[in-house]
Image (tube, rainbow, N blue to C red; front, side, top):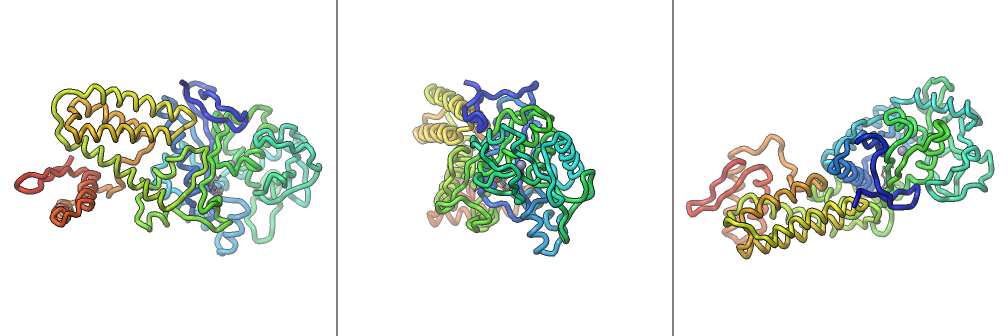
Length: 466
Ligand code: AMP
Ligand code: ZN
């Protein structure tokens, strides 16, 4: 079956192909850089990464824009409180976001763009909306008149027709029952950053930022627009209103929304204060690949209930996969082929592909992988895994890792020195003597990840670099 996604706009699972040639034009809302990203935010960005990688695996090229929101209500408030300029303040969290993304192996979008670098284009878009009479002014701010856009509500599937014309909201973030004409442009305030533009001095609202940056780089109609589920309303609803009012064309064909990560029964959120960062987890000794695994393991339309246990299971799962890879790379198998295992490997591969085609069902894709690993491990233990089974198993793992990307340990890029290798081998021998096989396996795995292969002989342990 073909690749398909759940489209929030139509509330249906739909087959996906890009509108033009082989390129997927995609926009995803990026971080608001007023603090470190929490693992809830990172869940959404990991979903975007899995989406990217699967589109690639299915033969599409990507033209993907992600924004960095570096001006909005919260940022301004925090920067003022810290006594810093907007750029000084946001630079720190932008860098932190990029570091976290790299640690989680999130592919870089083709365009990573900052809102403050597109202010003039935003002002020009607002001017055009005014010419089309979608706006009105009040006390120096400019508002979008939602009554002028009868389709308002079509993404969040809510009926806003009873909204009183002229009722306004100034904050960027608000709830559905607070639907009002929203600020496109905010009047300058003493002490707050503002810009001189064709529509006067001021600063943009959050929603217009995404509309303008999306259309600048990707054209008037996108193939996919994605973000966290909390952005559906008002942010994405407002993006649709502004963009479609400007162009008269559908803004995005597909809308994909990632469900929340939950901590102790509540949505993880900075404003609630119940949040954990990637740095917190790494500080507790978890590996970034395990965090990536944990975030990717629950299909994106299901809530992810985070617990420390789920982190520990993710560590073990990654370990199991790596041990299997290690066995494939280092054990000697007898000639021949195990036909039934060969068939299982083929089936696992098609089940894996089918699962991801099915609206990125990562849980099912992982189940396919772990069932194969279990069967192949048992075959190895029973001496029934043969030399000709190695390549298909490796091919499966390679396919698996183009999406999940957890097999390679995060190591020193420069490699490891001979002395360090010898020291680790000595530690491993000691661990083996004291029957601490968990530690000795761990060291073997660690060295393997760094490209060092161990061979235990009667004369002792020999090693070579791959
Ligand atoms: P922000 O930095 O607040 O603009 O959020 C960045 C992304 O994280 C957005 O796509 C949000 O929808 C998403 N997000 C926020 N909280 C969570 C959560 N608890 N779980 C999953 N995604 C979230
Ligand atoms: Zn956005």
